[in-house]
Image (cartoon, rainbow, N blue to C red; front, side):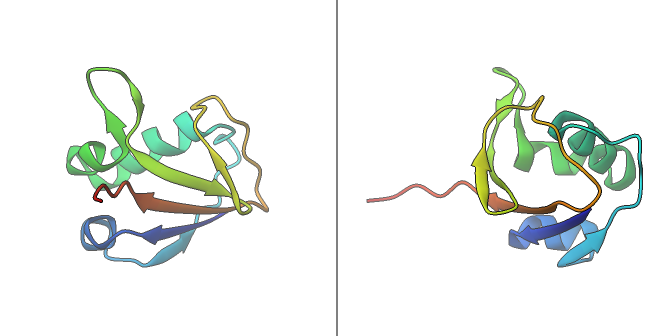
Length: 89
């Protein structure tokens, strides 16, 4: 799967704007997030998951479709974009 970091802080932590992850054991968004935490350290958590509610704190697109379910299934040929939530008005 190709993961694209559309967030300055994620790019700074991972030192990549995108990467190919070849890990057949990653089959859900939750598993992908755990993989990123294991590989890049706990600093990445605050940009991805709200620790109190255990809900996504980022916008995640899988093949162009926004998802919010951490159990959403992902596959080897998916393109995953991770964006930072932005507020304002």
